[in-house]
View 1: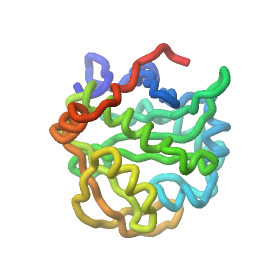
View 2: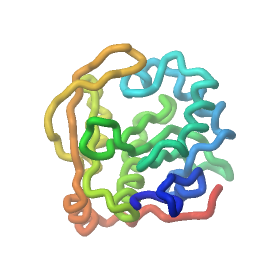
View 3: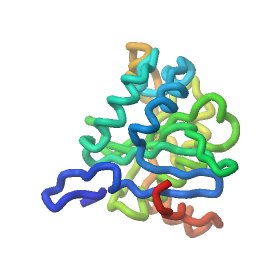
View 4: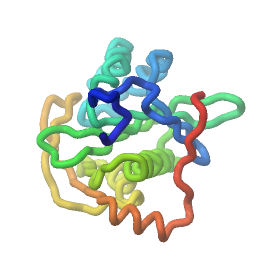
Length: 209
Protein backbone atom coordinates (compact mmCIF):
# COMPACT_ATOMS: atom_id res chain seq x y z
CA UNK A 1 0.00 0.00 0.00
CA UNK A 2 1.44 3.36 -0.98
CA UNK A 3 -0.91 5.82 0.68
CA UNK A 4 -3.28 5.59 3.63
CA UNK A 5 -5.61 2.70 2.83
CA UNK A 6 -8.21 0.51 4.41
CA UNK A 7 -7.46 -3.21 4.79
CA UNK A 8 -9.37 -3.79 1.54
CA UNK A 9 -7.09 -1.35 -0.29
CA UNK A 10 -9.63 1.44 -0.66
CA UNK A 11 -8.35 4.96 0.06
CA UNK A 12 -9.46 6.63 3.23
CA UNK A 13 -10.85 10.15 3.38
CA UNK A 14 -9.32 13.38 4.65
CA UNK A 15 -7.79 12.02 7.85
CA UNK A 16 -5.35 9.81 5.92
CA UNK A 17 -3.56 12.89 4.56
CA UNK A 18 -1.16 14.27 7.17
CA UNK A 19 -0.77 17.90 8.10
CA UNK A 20 2.67 19.10 6.99
CA UNK A 21 4.37 22.21 8.25
CA UNK A 22 7.29 24.20 6.83
CA UNK A 23 8.79 27.50 7.96
CA UNK A 24 6.06 29.56 6.31
CA UNK A 25 3.33 27.09 5.38
CA UNK A 26 0.82 24.58 6.69
CA UNK A 27 -0.32 21.95 4.20
CA UNK A 28 -3.37 19.76 4.84
CA UNK A 29 -6.20 18.01 3.00
CA UNK A 30 -8.73 20.43 1.48
CA UNK A 31 -12.03 20.64 3.36
CA UNK A 32 -15.51 21.87 2.51
CA UNK A 33 -14.84 24.91 4.67
CA UNK A 34 -12.17 25.91 2.14
CA UNK A 35 -14.53 26.01 -0.85
CA UNK A 36 -15.07 29.79 -0.91
CA UNK A 37 -11.35 30.56 -0.64
CA UNK A 38 -10.46 27.99 -3.30
CA UNK A 39 -13.04 29.35 -5.72
CA UNK A 40 -11.90 32.93 -5.18
CA UNK A 41 -8.23 32.25 -5.97
CA UNK A 42 -8.74 29.61 -8.68
CA UNK A 43 -11.09 31.79 -10.72
CA UNK A 44 -8.20 33.35 -12.58
CA UNK A 45 -7.51 32.87 -16.28
CA UNK A 46 -3.75 33.31 -15.75
CA UNK A 47 -3.76 30.29 -13.42
CA UNK A 48 -6.22 28.12 -15.34
CA UNK A 49 -4.35 28.41 -18.63
CA UNK A 50 -1.15 27.14 -16.99
CA UNK A 51 -2.73 24.05 -15.42
CA UNK A 52 -4.21 20.92 -16.93
CA UNK A 53 -7.44 20.52 -15.01
CA UNK A 54 -8.73 23.89 -13.79
CA UNK A 55 -11.71 25.18 -15.76
CA UNK A 56 -12.30 28.86 -16.37
CA UNK A 57 -14.46 30.43 -15.12
CA UNK A 58 -13.96 28.50 -11.89
CA UNK A 59 -17.15 28.50 -9.83
CA UNK A 60 -17.86 27.73 -6.21
CA UNK A 61 -19.64 24.57 -7.40
CA UNK A 62 -16.39 23.46 -9.08
CA UNK A 63 -14.51 23.86 -5.80
CA UNK A 64 -17.23 21.99 -3.91
CA UNK A 65 -17.17 19.07 -6.36
CA UNK A 66 -13.36 19.00 -6.26
CA UNK A 67 -13.22 18.70 -2.47
CA UNK A 68 -16.03 16.15 -2.30
CA UNK A 69 -14.43 13.76 -4.79
CA UNK A 70 -10.85 13.79 -3.47
CA UNK A 71 -11.24 10.66 -1.33
CA UNK A 72 -12.30 8.67 -4.40
CA UNK A 73 -9.00 9.28 -6.21
CA UNK A 74 -6.67 6.29 -5.67
CA UNK A 75 -2.91 6.57 -5.18
CA UNK A 76 -3.03 10.35 -4.92
CA UNK A 77 -2.62 13.04 -2.29
CA UNK A 78 -3.84 16.62 -2.46
CA UNK A 79 -2.77 19.37 -0.09
CA UNK A 80 -4.27 22.81 0.37
CA UNK A 81 -1.49 25.18 1.37
CA UNK A 82 -1.90 27.97 3.87
CA UNK A 83 0.43 30.84 4.62
CA UNK A 84 1.09 31.37 8.30
CA UNK A 85 0.15 34.75 9.70
CA UNK A 86 -0.63 36.59 12.90
CA UNK A 87 -2.76 33.94 14.56
CA UNK A 88 -4.43 32.93 11.28
CA UNK A 89 -3.81 30.85 8.18
CA UNK A 90 -4.42 32.25 4.69
CA UNK A 91 -5.25 29.89 1.82
CA UNK A 92 -2.68 30.31 -0.96
CA UNK A 93 -2.98 27.39 -3.40
CA UNK A 94 -2.81 23.64 -3.98
CA UNK A 95 -0.17 20.95 -4.44
CA UNK A 96 -0.94 17.34 -5.35
CA UNK A 97 0.45 14.20 -6.87
CA UNK A 98 -1.41 11.40 -8.59
CA UNK A 99 -1.30 9.12 -11.59
CA UNK A 100 -2.83 10.29 -14.89
CA UNK A 101 -3.03 7.46 -17.44
CA UNK A 102 -1.09 6.81 -19.59
CA UNK A 103 1.70 8.47 -17.58
CA UNK A 104 4.18 5.94 -16.13
CA UNK A 105 4.37 7.54 -12.67
CA UNK A 106 2.43 9.94 -10.46
CA UNK A 107 2.62 13.55 -11.63
CA UNK A 108 3.07 16.44 -9.24
CA UNK A 109 0.95 19.49 -9.90
CA UNK A 110 0.51 22.84 -8.19
CA UNK A 111 -1.00 26.25 -8.48
CA UNK A 112 -0.54 29.36 -6.36
CA UNK A 113 -2.99 32.25 -6.09
CA UNK A 114 -1.82 35.36 -7.95
CA UNK A 115 -1.53 37.53 -4.79
CA UNK A 116 1.18 35.13 -3.55
CA UNK A 117 3.33 34.92 -6.69
CA UNK A 118 7.03 35.74 -6.57
CA UNK A 119 7.56 34.78 -2.92
CA UNK A 120 8.96 31.24 -3.28
CA UNK A 121 5.80 29.71 -1.88
CA UNK A 122 5.39 27.20 -4.70
CA UNK A 123 8.94 25.88 -4.27
CA UNK A 124 8.55 25.55 -0.51
CA UNK A 125 5.23 23.73 -0.85
CA UNK A 126 6.34 21.41 -3.65
CA UNK A 127 9.48 20.43 -1.73
CA UNK A 128 7.37 19.53 1.28
CA UNK A 129 5.07 17.31 -0.77
CA UNK A 130 8.00 15.65 -2.57
CA UNK A 131 9.58 14.88 0.81
CA UNK A 132 6.30 13.40 1.99
CA UNK A 133 5.90 11.29 -1.17
CA UNK A 134 9.38 9.79 -0.99
CA UNK A 135 9.75 9.49 2.79
CA UNK A 136 6.32 8.07 3.61
CA UNK A 137 5.19 6.13 0.53
CA UNK A 138 6.92 3.56 -1.65
CA UNK A 139 6.91 5.74 -4.78
CA UNK A 140 10.09 5.47 -6.81
CA UNK A 141 9.48 8.23 -9.35
CA UNK A 142 7.58 11.50 -9.69
CA UNK A 143 7.06 13.35 -12.94
CA UNK A 144 6.11 16.93 -13.64
CA UNK A 145 5.50 19.27 -16.55
CA UNK A 146 5.42 22.97 -17.25
CA UNK A 147 4.08 24.85 -20.24
CA UNK A 148 6.91 26.13 -22.39
CA UNK A 149 5.50 29.65 -21.91
CA UNK A 150 5.65 29.32 -18.10
CA UNK A 151 9.30 29.69 -17.03
CA UNK A 152 8.30 30.32 -13.39
CA UNK A 153 6.76 26.84 -13.13
CA UNK A 154 9.80 25.32 -14.79
CA UNK A 155 12.06 27.00 -12.22
CA UNK A 156 10.00 25.52 -9.37
CA UNK A 157 10.56 22.00 -10.70
CA UNK A 158 14.25 22.59 -11.30
CA UNK A 159 14.79 24.04 -7.82
CA UNK A 160 13.09 20.95 -6.39
CA UNK A 161 15.56 18.62 -8.12
CA UNK A 162 13.53 17.58 -11.17
CA UNK A 163 15.52 16.85 -14.31
CA UNK A 164 14.33 17.68 -17.81
CA UNK A 165 13.23 14.54 -19.65
CA UNK A 166 11.79 15.80 -22.94
CA UNK A 167 8.89 17.63 -24.48
CA UNK A 168 5.28 16.67 -25.06
CA UNK A 169 1.70 17.86 -25.25
CA UNK A 170 -0.77 18.29 -22.41
CA UNK A 171 -4.45 19.11 -22.74
CA UNK A 172 -5.48 22.26 -20.86
CA UNK A 173 -9.15 22.26 -19.88
CA UNK A 174 -9.43 26.04 -19.74
CA UNK A 175 -8.18 26.32 -23.34
CA UNK A 176 -9.94 23.26 -24.71
CA UNK A 177 -6.72 22.39 -26.52
CA UNK A 178 -3.40 20.63 -26.15
CA UNK A 179 -0.30 22.75 -25.59
CA UNK A 180 3.46 22.02 -25.65
CA UNK A 181 5.10 21.31 -22.31
CA UNK A 182 8.54 20.54 -20.98
CA UNK A 183 8.57 17.27 -19.05
CA UNK A 184 10.60 16.54 -15.93
CA UNK A 185 11.21 13.65 -13.58
CA UNK A 186 12.65 13.05 -10.12
CA UNK A 187 13.51 9.59 -8.87
CA UNK A 188 13.93 8.48 -5.29
CA UNK A 189 17.72 8.06 -5.56
CA UNK A 190 18.25 11.62 -6.75
CA UNK A 191 15.91 12.90 -4.03
CA UNK A 192 17.82 10.93 -1.38
CA UNK A 193 21.10 12.40 -2.58
CA UNK A 194 19.70 15.92 -2.51
CA UNK A 195 18.36 15.36 1.00
CA UNK A 196 21.77 14.11 2.15
CA UNK A 197 23.52 17.14 0.65
CA UNK A 198 20.96 19.69 1.73
CA UNK A 199 20.55 21.48 5.01
CA UNK A 200 16.75 21.77 5.21
CA UNK A 201 14.73 19.50 7.44
CA UNK A 202 11.88 17.30 6.32
CA UNK A 203 8.47 18.97 6.72
CA UNK A 204 7.10 18.57 10.21
CA UNK A 205 3.90 16.66 10.88
CA UNK A 206 1.62 18.65 13.12
CA UNK A 207 -1.81 18.39 14.63
CA UNK A 208 -4.70 19.34 12.39
CA UNK A 209 -5.34 23.08 12.24
